[in-house]
Image 1 (cartoon, rainbow, N blue to C red):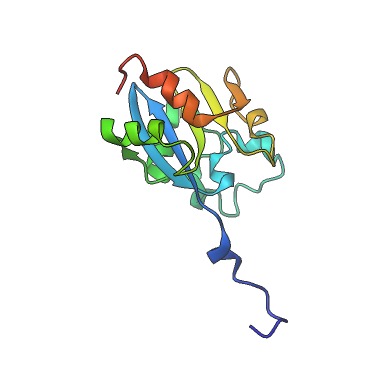
Image 2: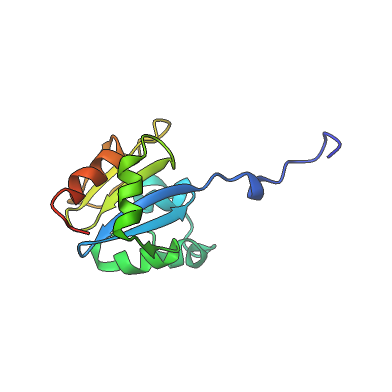
Amino acid sequence: MNGDEMPDTESQVEEWLGVVQYQRTFYGIIGIVAEFILDYHAYDPTFDESAGAANFRNGLLTVDVDNAQSFISALNGRRLTSADIDSFIRAPTEPDLMVFIDFDAKRYVHSYHDMLLEKYVPKGWKGVLGDPRQELRLRTRDGLT
């Protein structure tokens, strides 16, 4: 680059790591921050659904229990083993777990301080800024894996 060109923002997009609990099963997911906003309509009411919504999370603008499996698929979800979960729980900070989404309890916990993601959850959900790793510890202490 000679300084006049725009950087390739596509390659500079930071991906997040998250864990989802759905029907008492845990999945690892990866996506960009926008993909972790469960109620995209609440976040951006002006989003033009006709201009690319089908490419965004497989067309899921609001994610809830009814379309959880499609959301997990859209973010390349992978079922976590007990060993995977143990490694998340035991690791103090790495890998950086940014979000825990519990579809069973309708609870969303994120650790991103730059945005109020907890405000953009479906009606009837509880969203909080907190420690997703601690939330995973709480959810697995009863042997739900």
